[in-house]
Image (tube, rainbow, N blue to C red):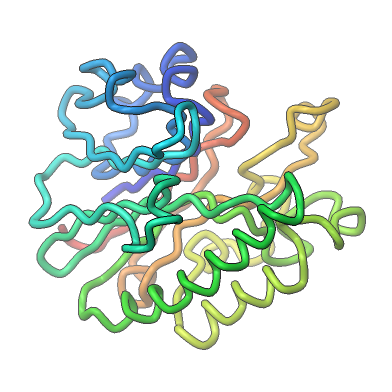
Length: 259
C-alpha cells in the first residue's frame, strides 16, 4: 500500500507542472494533498477525480489559501472535514477518511513565519491538535497522518539549523511538542524510523529565495506519522525530486499493511 503526501503550493499550479500526469506511474492507494489554494469552483473534473481515484477535500473559506485533500481508490465509510474548531476549520486544515480498521488523514499545520500573531495561532493549533492526536491514538484503528507539519524536529532535519534556532518551524517549543507526540502518545515518524540518519535526502521543502533548492538548503517538514503497528509495516520511503511540482517535494512511503 503506497501512500503519498504532497504539499502542492496551489493545486492549479501543480497540475500545470505535471502533477496529475505523474500520479498514474506511482500506483498509490492514497495521495494526501496540502495547500490546495483553491475552492470548489476552481476545481476541474481531473482535479476532483483523476483516473482511478475519487477526491475528497476540505477547502479554506479564504480564496487562494490553505486547503487539504485526499485522492483515494476506495470509497471511505466516513469523511471527516475539520477538527470541530471553527477558527481552525475555516482555514481548511484537516481531512480524515475512515475505513474499517484504518484512517488516512491529510493535515496542514499553520506556519508562524509571517509574524507573532500567526505564531500564536500555530501554538493554539498545536495545543488543540495534541488532544485530538491522543483521541486518534486510542480510537482502535490504524492511523496514518500525512501532511506539512511546518516543524523540523531535530538538527538533522534542516540544513541551516544554527541560523534557524529562533525562527518559526524550528523553535524549541515546536520541537518539544513533536517529541511529546512521539514519546508520550507513541506515534511513529515513519520516514525517520526507516532512515534514522538521513540528512539531505530527507528534505521536503526549500525556500524560493536564493538558490536554496539548487544547493539543497532544505527542511524536512512533511511527515507521515502513524500508529505503531502500521508504521512497523513500512518497507521503503523516499522524497521524490525528479520533477518539481511545488516548493515541496512528495513524500512517498510503501507499507505492507493489508488494505
